[in-house]
Image 1 (cartoon, rainbow, N blue to C red):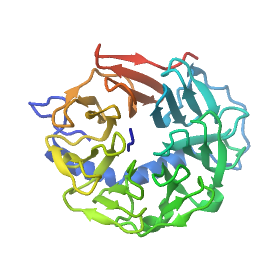
Image 2 (tube, helix red, strand yellow):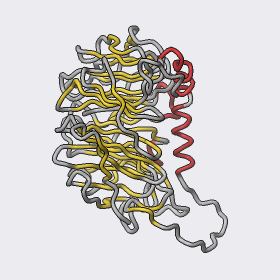
Image 3 (tube, helix red, strand yellow):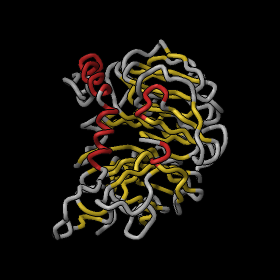
Image 4 (cartoon, helix red, strand yellow):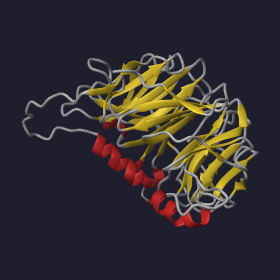
Length: 376
């Protein structure tokens, strides 16, 4: 699966906010989304303050992901039971559906020590090829900030390109032309900030000017070389030539918060101000499937394209008919952060929580959440 506020509740859908009443809130939210993420990166990032440090007690670990201050930035669910979690303090990997976890980067003495990891992504042609971005956390930087890559599904990592060379990187997305293609967005450059690399991130070239000053989501369409979709607070646009030229999709109005597709030739879903849209022609056209609610993040089950999961600020929802109807899932206590659909089982979805970092898996068969959070 490839991805990428509530208002007064409807009586017919008691847990889902109305699209009309939340549209203005969503638009305001999207307008500050990039600024919020940038502030998050700035706040999460450390930096040398020049003030002498005093000895303070080390915070207690609350679970295997660390202290209560840890929080996730990205989560991937890949085939062969592999889960990856990029957090403020460490990049974690599981190869048994979350039963056990191992820190593969960002830990003491490891590559990316003293850095937070974010924008974790995989190439659409080869899920062994992963990319992740870093920002400073520790007062004293112990390595090089920038874009890192893995050729073995996150077991090991190496630096591809430094932030000092590239600039401030907002996000990364694996490509769809070759297994070594990757896109990045440099937010300081606005509509000229989308860059592409054909050699695993070692060298980047310009793409065309984006139709928006900034964006909320980039979807690299799997199985369709050169086809991209970019969502923003002002709508959705598509490119069929690797971002050299863009066309605004006029059938979607308002903000677009999330984009997801199960894989090559599958439907593409968009979530935004007016509800949920779907495309059955590779993103050329979109039509509404659900307009009663404004939902935030959505993910689709790769093994069953009609099964969708959605997350708002207060609840998780599931649809089994391509987004036409939605059911509320049992509530999870904590700060819900992001979703990832299980690649081979449409009955399951993963949820990460923040402050502290936790991971849960939902199973539709028994309507329950199972904690995958390791012990301290």
